[in-house]
Image 1 (cartoon, rainbow, N blue to C red):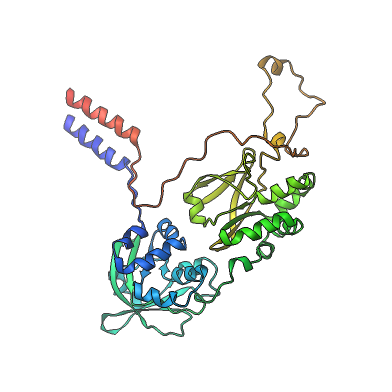
Image 2 (cartoon, rainbow, N blue to C red):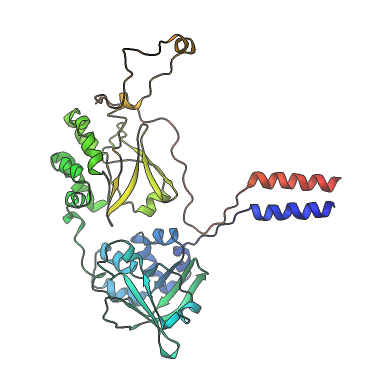
Length: 406
């Protein structure tokens, strides 16, 4: 009887423990020196983080000689990112599956297609099982020319990630097209074309703030622009700010470092902005909940709802609310103290006096930074095993020990 109960409890323990496996493309490729250049540029373009975040994925790596050929043309880092993103298939293709493709051919979407940078279907790759046991690859916009071949499997974690080596880089005029130099990008045009025209126009009308944005691009810039309806409703408050307050408010939506969406999801915590200056912190907290990324100040929380551009060193995202920095809106963000119990009991049901609200005219005086702990750091993308249900484990082990002592 005791043995039956013990076995049942152990079964419950095994089913209550959740194990989650991950992968790290940098570590995988790091074991193969001949693929070191490809590995280096996955990290430099921040594609490695995107790959680690995804599952059911195939990375088509090339050796150092193949990478040297494209690097000799001195492409920009954005162009290299487009080229390499064409080599990340958004489906799992292990060695066995490659040689057993249904009907002999398959069309796979790539990370290049997913970024929106590939016009039409130019971000798809044709995979064909040709005669003699060979598997050929070619971009869909390559006129049907299949001159890139499967070499070997590097590593497979079934149905999670497959890393294979192919004979050379996939030729694509679209992916290899020159991209404009970062400083030549007109960020206000990008915002205006993607639902943030009111914010963009306000930025253009403020030369000090707009110059700070433009001067920061080359070194890395991430912008969170409020959508039109949201910022339009905020304009009356904005007009009540002093000249310096307006500059700080506009700069508050820019971060002087490039952050891809994957980086934002894995690097939760406090983030400085273009407005940060000494004791004037002007910071906010980045937090993610699953696939959603939120930006928080003491009194406001905004969610990233779209990607306008993500081409290193520039990323621009749209957000659904206007973040209010405490340094400018201290009165609006500080909650009124709760009344004493006696006062609350004797208070009349209605009053002629209203409490201050967030709609009142904002203050332009400096304030301390928000209190509270920074957001917990999320786990990185390294290979990991996570065990859940610790309390249940302790309870079951205690019961087992008690039964054995009977």
